[in-house]
Image (tube, rainbow, N blue to C red; front, side, top):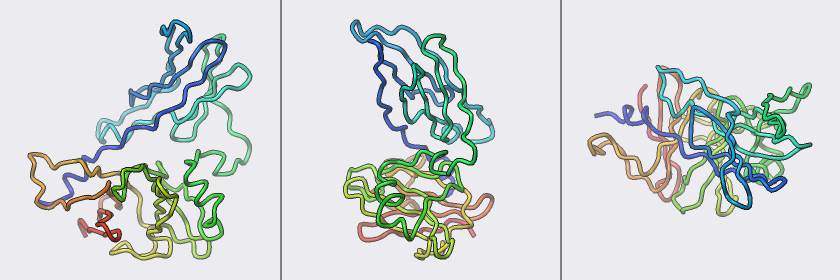
Length: 257
């Protein structure tokens, strides 16, 4: 039995916790518990009573695709001029008027930089965007999502896998930024791994394959033992592969031609 049927059903990891905003005695939170609807709740700071909730945006679901990979959640809340600013995983920004409870999507700034449009995780900013690797690599926004979170080396810390491009060659790859140390491993982008080579320009899909996921019926004959979460990378209607940590290095496990 092949590995691919199990990869197709791989689930996305839970969204990151969003810090609440407290304003004039009210606490505004983003529960992030509904993949089809992103909404805000307002709570009384003294009585801890929920006052209202309001939908900020909804996600249209294509029934022919796996649903959870289409979910889009809120990544941050902030306050600006009595407006609650809500940012989504896709980098879109919405403004919630706290007086009228009306929601508007912010107009993009003319010719914004990619970094301004996309919210780059803080570990990636420290290690790559503003770090020592900035001279060699830049974050690539060619796929949505352009980064994934998981415990890739099995140390119990949440790491970030982000698409990058080697500045000198334009070759595309993946940088894994480790949550515990902020150290970085480059796969592709000039560093070859397995059949993927040193340029992942061919890749048009990727997702997490959880280390805790078990094949249907408990049949794990063809699934290797994972120390951490794995990455499923592929090209639509063609080959796919698993990239996983074996305790010493990242291994490429090919699936398909």
